[in-house]
Amino acid sequence: MIIGLRPLDGVLSANYWNTRSESLKGIFFGNHFAGGENSIQRPFYFLRKFKIVPFWKCLNALSFAGMRALTTDNSPKMISYEKIFENNAEWIAKKKATDAEFFEKLAIDQNPDYLYIGCSDSRVTAEEMMGAKPGEVFVHRNIGNLVVSIDVNVMSVINYAVNYLQVKHIIVCGHYNCGGVKAAMTQEDMGILNPWLRNIRDVFRIHKEELHAITDSKKQFDRLVELNVREQCINVIKTAAVQKQFIHTGYPIVHGWVMDIKSGRLIDLQIDFEKELKGIQEIYRLI
Ligand SMILES: [Zn+2]
Image (cartoon, rainbow, N blue to C red; front, side, top):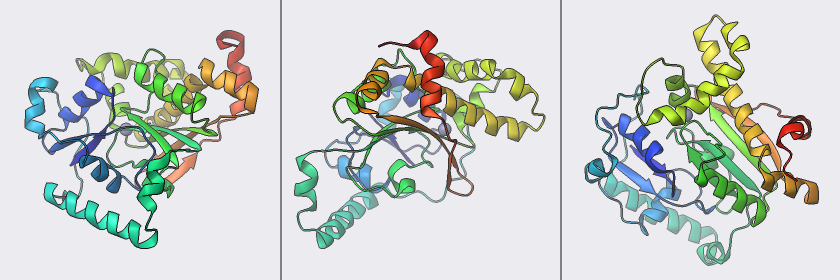
């Protein structure tokens, strides 16, 4: 298994991966530039540029041994490390076959219309499930697709995407069966994960009446996934960058999605962006 890691995703994300260390063989350190066609091919391109460190060499740096697994690993047979580079070569050849100057053009600049903020879960791929091509989506992923105001990483991504890339749409995408959300519903000390997961526990607290009224635990889990996406959308709308840009240009529009892993279907939660913006302005207006 290989899981994508983007700069400054940092300790918390690494911690989560270590909880799945039974199957984790490598960590991908990439970047946010909108490039690469899908979750397989895109990391492989960057693997050529960033030397991968075997997972066992990361253990000292991560030092989170002993964390228990948050999810059950029933994933299919994993791709071998060597096969990655074979696939990369095939991907390059395929791209060049349809457009000989594909990479020359890709290297010029990026101008994506979409910022995607999703979960680090290896099963929920951004570009692949959207059918997006390289250069079309600026991506940020972390455990539980959280937008935390003091997280320099996600705030940098949002500010860059809004102010410089001038994206038209910001998508927060959660998914059912999310290990991060599940962990936040578990009454247990999870060490360094506690402050991160507390953001999801806060979502539960805000919506506890609705959630406690759901007696089916699976449905309650699914609903918390949806409510978490909604609250993270509101956190995006709270930012000065989004508020200012929207006043001046009418963009970006913020959307909340949930990916149903069992069917692959993307569900649009139909967040009413302008209504939500008006709703928070009494307290969170920053312009
Ligand atoms: Zn997740």
